Each structure stands twice: as structure tokens, then as C-alpha cells.
Length: 343
Image 1 (cartoon, rainbow, N blue to C red):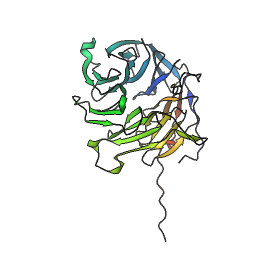
Image 2: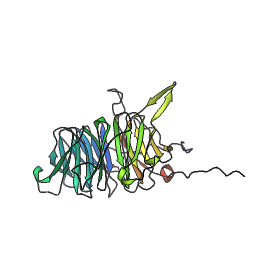
Image 3: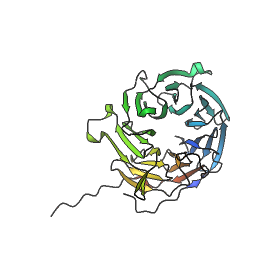
Image 4: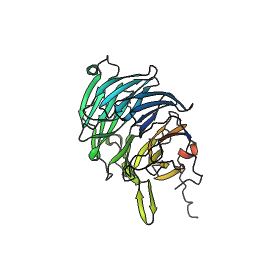
């Protein structure tokens, strides 16, 4: 059920956006700094509150993902097969390691003190950035995957890996010799996003067919009907046709357990997953939504409006980053209304 409130404005547009497709954006865990990776071969660091570009770092190929270490440094995954460490304060970077194919995704584990990367070479690799200089001193291990790695999500020591072929592997970073769980997505088509629940008890998946799957981990649940379910979103009916849009991103609210989705329809929606109801829909953005991120205190939501080529190469709006304030009414689940008992 859609909120009766009018759609909120898209937000404040940041200056100096990337000049090619935005692959990801992430808020810092310590401030309102925002890290953005792009196909224009750059990683950009913004102060989202001040609307200022604090740094720009060139790579040898398109940058497919990025993440923070802390407010002074971060990491990037590049199509030139490299994993890089970026030191913002000194404006420099170094190569932490390499894969044998483009590096698609990257995460930093505060629990393990390691960088985890996934690549189209069908491997997962772990790196210790605290090691002395030299790739052989930072490398921790390689973990083969059943297919090309598309997505990673991490909370605490729990890592969820989504690959081509709809495979999902769940790891404990303290026991990387084999996955805790091996699964296949119940969604019929390619996985587009994966996000761990903030409490580490499960994860959410989205697909190119406009569907979401919620799944509890076997080790974290009793056997009950709601341990796994799916529902459809990012769809609309037009001339008796059901038009389906890929769900490109999921951003989970750490307090209420609600979540935002973004899709190729240009809309950001807030959902109550437990009740499978939409809470809020923001005004339409200029083009596809490529990435979303809540700030550490959930006051802000960053939105990457960037065409994702779901309809092939065609003229499209320029890439842009919007930052909007989040109101509680948009993200807080509505209480259930029970019918009055018969007299």
C-alpha cells in the first residue's frame, strides 16, 4: 500500500559528478563522507553535507566497486584486475593485489581486519592491508567459487557471495576453508544485488526480473514458513502488459528493518518487507538508479542516478548523485490494524 503523502523531492544534487556510469557509492561509518566509483576510471570522495568534492583518484580501468577503510583511506576494485588502497589525506594510492580478471566487488571487514574481493576469475580473495608493503605480504588466501563473482555483502564475520548461475555461498570469515552454506537463489533470473541483514541472521537478494527474496540462514533460524519468501516490485502495468524493471540495489534500515530499493524505472521505494508493503515512493529520478546508501545515522540517503544500459546504448540523462534527508515517516513500519471483534 502506497503512502498517502505526496512523493518527496529527489534531494540535493552534488556538484562534480562522475562523467560515466556510477558503479557504486557508500557512506562512511564515521562521517557524512561519500565514496563513489565509476566507469570513468575514477574514485571520488565527497563531503555530502557540504556538497564538496574532497578528492579524485584515477585508475587504469573502469572502477567497479569501492569501500571505506576509515575516513582517511579506502579500497577499490577495478576492471584492470587490480585491488587498490587509496589514502585520501595524501592523495595517493597503491596496488594491494591482483586477480586474473576484472575485480567486480570489494568489502572491508572491521571484524577480521581484511579486505575481501570477488572477481570474474571465479575466485574470492582476502588481503590484510596491515601487512608490510608488497602484494605477497598482504595476501591472505584464495577461495574458488562455482562461477564469476558478481556481488558481496558483509556484516560482522558473515560474508554472503552471489555469483553467476544464481549460486549463493555463505562464509564465516574465521573459517574460510569452506562455505557455511551453499545455496541457489529461488529467483529465476540473474542476481542483481545482495545485502546481509544488519543483525547477521540472513540476507536479501534482488533480480533482473524485479523480484526480491528474503532468506534466513539455516544456522540462525528455527524451521518455519517465513524463513524464506519472495515478492515482486519494480513493476507497472501499461496497455495490459506487465513491464518489469531490474532491482539494482537494496539499502537496509539498521533500526526498523525496512529497506529501500532502486530500479531501472528511476524510482526509489521504501518497503516493509515483513508485511510486503510499500511505505513510500520518492519522486522519479532522471534515469535508472544505479546505487543507494544510507548514512551512518540514517539521516541521509545517497542516490546514484545513472543509466545502467538495460535498454542498450541510447541517449540518456547525465550521471548525477542526489543526497536527500530521510524522514521517519518514510521508513518506520506502520502498525498493523486488526479488525474489531464481533459484538
